[in-house]
Length: 145
Image (cartoon, rainbow, N blue to C red; front, top):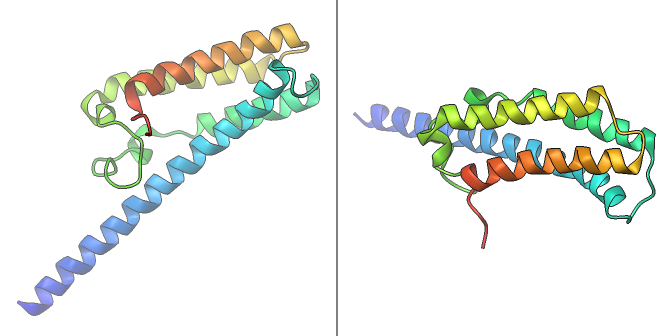
């Protein structure tokens, strides 16, 4: 009996650690997305000069990152606990969440395929990216504080 309890405890601990890694991995993806959008937003706000090469690099990195998002792998059942701002709605409305991720993938791919060549075009691209992020965060992210 003691061995059984130890085995179950070890399995529970391993599962908890695995879930913590999944949460940390998806948080790293989102932070990297924010970093790339931040590069673009600085140009839009006039905090940095428009730089077509930097736009291309940021959009390429953002798109590559976004295309790797796998909802089933990144948000399995049980990863709604702990240090996460993922809303329980992700698991309650998996189809709606997948639709938001698919929309983000399409917007990122479109932007990367035709990166802005001037500030006005960049403003439009950043607006579309921002709207997609906001739409998902409104429904599927718990606000901090």
